[in-house]
Image (cartoon, rainbow, N blue to C red; front, side, top):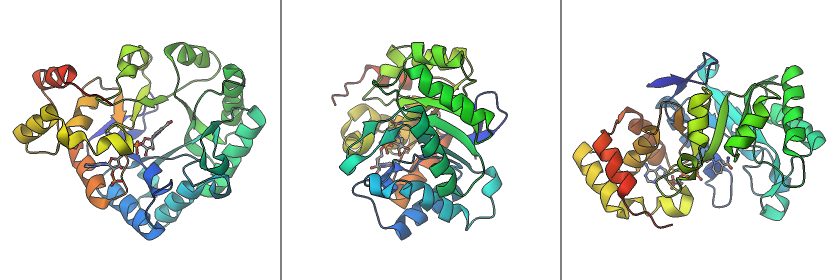
Length: 289
Ligand SMILES: NC(=O)c1ccc[n+]([C@@H]2O[C@H](COP(=O)([O-])OP(=O)(O)OC[C@H]3O[C@@H](n4cnc5c(N)ncnc54)[C@H](OP(=O)(O)O)[C@@H]3O)[C@@H](O)[C@H]2O)c1
């Protein structure tokens, strides 16, 4: 397995994490298939799993993904080297995605995640997204209290700007930022968030690195990715993941999958490095979402 380090924690993580969301949201496979996909991703070395309390069908199903992961970890003897990163700060009323950064409810969500994961402390707890109705710093202060209480070991943010990263760092030490990043959506490169992570030694977890469920199906029709894939004898999806990683040593893509073969392809892609010329070709290619 090819590894890097989670920020300055000394915790070894694979250069690609596994995004477990597709195993629990609308269109999910049955749980037995979900467990097989998780075991395959872990066996192939993707020992960082990204999850969230809201990876589920709706508010009555909160914690589905965390419980699925816990059931898989209970079957393994390598639990100690598997890092589960979860999140709080959203809700799923009737299947919609809404923000909830209220400090009290954030604490409740964290405690429910502890129970769903069956652990005393969460290694990496990420604030899912700033809530426009709650002062951002109030939510972050609750993360600091959860850390002080020993319920979470390390704190991460998601869906944030460079200014929000700077503000949060004055309240609590951060180790990671999780924002969208793919050849289709490059805002993290353009708005300075990846640069901020590099400067502050934060791990940047690139979510939806294949463009998400809908656009990932179109990767195979992007001529530049197909051509580079042929040169390297890998899939165009593997090329897209290597492109994200080429943006800096702090960038760790977290591709999702609901099929074993896709999880294995993303794991194999950890060993691909693009040349500067190949990166420049993808930079210049047309991706219309
Ligand atoms: N923080 C946030 O707000 C946020 C938002 C979105 C996602 N995330 C995280 O990021 C993770 C990844 O994002 P995502 O799941 O939205 O999108 P993604 O990783 O860009 O794409 C996932 C889709 O790509 C397909 N796929 C994966 N590997 C493939 C391969 N090698 N060849 C062909 N198809 C492949 C999968 O198909 P199959 O399902 O058929 O295997 C899946 O539908 C999520 O699981 C979640 O952990 C976080």
